[in-house]
Image (cartoon, rainbow, N blue to C red):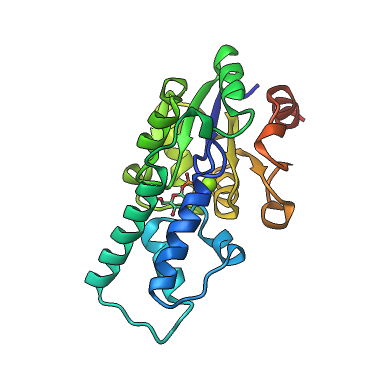
Amino acid sequence: SPKLFIFDLDGVITDTAEFHYLAWKKLAEELGVTFDRQFNEQLKGISRMESLERILALNPALSLTEEDKEQRAHDKNEYYKNLIASIDGEHTLPGIENLLKEIQGSGIKIALGSASKNASMVLEKLGLTNYFNYIVDAAKVSKGKPDPETFTTAADTLGIAYSDCIGVEDAAAGVEAINKAGMFSVGVGSSDHLAAADYIVEDTAKLNFEEIVRQYVS
Ligand code: B16
Ligand code: MG
C-alpha cells in the first residue's frame, strides 16, 4: 500500500484556481491582452513569473522591462490576495477533508506539493494545516512543475520511496511532474487535459480513498 499522498493545492484542495484565473484576467486586461479560460489551463500549476511570461507572449508587441514585470507580478498577487482574503473552511472542495481524515486515519502520511507562494496561508485559512506532515511550496524548490522537484522534495524530506507515493493534481503540468517522479498520478478534472494521469476522476467528490488505493495497487 502507499506510504505518502502528495496533494496539489489550487484546484484540488480548494478552488483558488478560480481566483488565480480572475486575478490574471484583470492583469491581462490592463495589458490589453485577451485571455480566456482555455488559455488559463496552461497557467495552472505554473509559477507566478512563468505565468506572466506566457501571458506577455500572447502579444509579441509588448516589451516590458524586468522592473515592470516584477510590478505586474506583484499587482496580480495583490488582486489574488484580495480575492482570497475571506476564504474559510467552506472553500475546501467537496470530499477533500473526509479524504484527508481517512488517509491520516490509515497511518499514511500527507504532504502538500504546491507551486504557490501563498500555499501555507491558504491551508491555514481552510483550517487544514494539521493534516499535513510536510508542505512544499514555491519557496522550497528551484524548478517548478512540470519538473518533478515539487513532488520528490516531499518524498525525500519524509524519507519515502517515490514508488510508494501517490500525487493528486488538477493541472497537466502537475500530472507530468508526478509521472516524471515515478509516482502514481491521480488527475482531477477532464481527460482532455489530464490524459497522462494513471487514474482520472471528474471532480474531487469522486476521490474515494479505497478506490485510489485499489487503482494504485493494480
Ligand atoms: P502564487 P498549485 C499554483 O498552485 C497555481 O496553480 C498557479 O495558477 C499559480 O500561478 C501558482 O501556484 C503560483 O501561485 O502566485 O500564489 O505563488 O496548483 O501548484 O497549488
Ligand atoms: Mg493545481
